[in-house]
Length: 636
Ligand code: K7E
Ligand code: CUA
Ligand code: CA
Image (cartoon, rainbow, N blue to C red; front, side, top):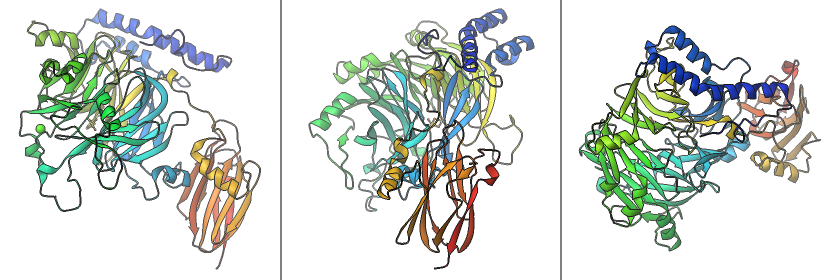
């Protein structure tokens, strides 16, 4: 639980009168919140859905969550952008979209995918689509540490890292020997040494066209990625496939659901058995095996590949009902919950039994302390700080709130009702997430439910509909729906992080590593980026260095020859927060962001003779329209 009194209060300069007002507002929101709401719920009676609340109660409960103009949100929401390939930042509880972080996609506004700096992160011939599902922040001792965000790309088997100080992607790796990185989580403790990544699809090895019909020989692997180096540390072969993953709070175990224990390549085949499994990975034993050289490698990579199939000492397989999907560790660290999908049940694992399981003192199913029915299509579970779990029911279009301890009692035969409330959501929820809910600091304030269908909830925008992300107040005894938020394709998952844990830079540091290569190039060319505008010719390569200060570019013209490869390097010398410039070369597909104190560069071929205007396209000044210049291309 966050203590709002001291260290976790927003890091805002209290000397700034405006800022201290924000602190007061947030303190009021934060402290006043749950008591007021519990009062309201108590007066009306437990078990009453939000839709049935009297108008006055609803209005007062809504105003508690409103964030007025100029007020700051309490939480950062980090949203997967699905197959848009990006990550998004929302403010919670306003659900305002604050920023987009291009990751695997091309972004016209910032020039991500166009600039040299972003191409360096993406890789020379990177595919420019992505399919993001699972954004997660690095942790220390089971708490967000505000350092990095990680996200998967199912479409091209990649994992990206985002620096939280500038909220830009700084590393992208392709995981070798696998197809479709789906489930992704971080090691929660003692710190995020590894990012755990599931490769979903089984495939032949080697995938050289010779064993395509030998389906039984296909396999996939669980991957441990070094979070700091962003290199794959090891891969471990499993039976079945891999869907979602999570980790415990000791750092010893990670575990993944499998919906295709059958090893099928057709839909019917994946549903043939009544049970699939959860596979548990013993991280200490895996590390010891790597150290002892107990691994092989696959052609084309030197990543250690371990055997984690049934019978391996590095893994254990626990049968769970039909085609499970999400796996979620409860904030206390005591339980993890597998969500049944084709089974109306969730399976509760007691994590401190895993030591005994690996010591072969107990059987795999002895780690299961409950397997209870919730409703149709359980996909993902989130948690508050009061022992309650919130599971999305895809088919029922509901969130089921249930109590974990009561479910365990019921499973052992006691006549207790473990289901506390079912709330309709609109429609067909996938993931849900609570504020701070995947950490020790779960605070039970808000739940977001991410729906796959919005149907009639918004104005029609043609056949393609937005998704619907709903915000639910869970601070009282009953869940209350408080906001509908349309979003573009497709936030599978999100996390909500208290704003005190995220510290971003207001302007760039001139030493920022994201443009270090460009600075090094300038140095080789003998150009001081902070004081010089200069054109360097190097054969048919031309490097144009210029500064920018609102509302002028350092060069209002430069000359090149037709066919030259031109690299424009711009350093924004403005030091004022929010004064970002852009550089767009008309008719050349060239565009980039240059934020205060940033250096950015873009390379293109000047293939058309004549005058070509360039201009600034981030509005920066009253004379922003006048911030422009000419590229003069002389015939060869
Ligand atoms: Cu359920 Cu990719 Cu986490 Cu979608 S996954 S919902
Ligand atoms: Cu510089 Cu607009
Ligand atoms: Ca199955």
